[in-house]
Image (cartoon, rainbow, N blue to C red):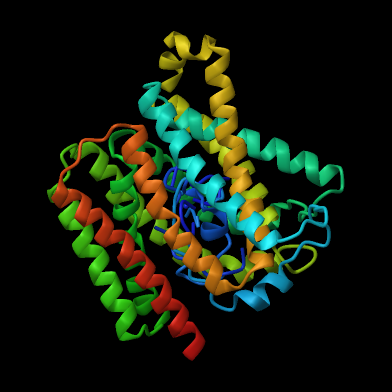
Length: 398
């Protein structure tokens, strides 16, 4: 459930996962791809990120991903999709600052924890990790819904049939984000995820005849240049990781475009005529469980799970459980932050959030880098900020 958002999410971070605003995925980083769930699952438009997120993801996610957020019509969306019962927060002074800080910490932590599990522990069952994180998210959301703390739409066969194609892409987005995060350092992953923005914008123009202004296309070109330059100068370049990430970008863009196509039908399939963020989180994660089990068996992860000593370590279970909680936290904190601030603030903070994330990823995992690669990464991060500003300017003019 990760809303696929390190950023504006949706990396593994991205996830669960990881939402009426339009969001541009760059996700889930793995469950950053949920990380972005607000980004990924919440978008009403095609440029809705994974997670916002890999927000996707799981949030979109959860994030499994860290994304740039395109929040068109977000003010109307906030009120329209506000659950009738939301978490009752105490009257805290300066909630804008507190909610923004909580959102940044959740989205960054999601990606870093996933990276630690996959690379630090050397865990080689990324699909099982996604499956377990989704189980954690379903358990928490269902418990809160049954206790009356939050409100979610009842799941019906009509709604499931409408949403199933989106969910299949969602699962693919989370899994490829997990696989790529294992081989690629966090800083480069955030830059490469920008390619999903280019694919999504191109898809919007081709399929939905949506026109973007010159500044948007310039920022997208800068993202492509930074991704190519970053890959060429990446001292830890891994062909397998880059292949998975390219596939993830196509799936992330497909998720955003497909979500726009089915959203109206999905709302009509609900009893209330609406589908809020938490309902999408629950729907995506519940539907991903049987598919996740099939993929765990298909990729023969069961044999590895039976042999690995990691599953006999209580600390390892604590860490992967925390990653599932963080994926869901991205969804809650992104909704809280969006209600306390404007779309402009939300989008720009999501873009700027990638900068400390990239620095933390390099320092914590002792990534070998060069001056050329560092400049490419910085160039890509600034291009993301420029893209967020260009989209907000385009939306305000339209």
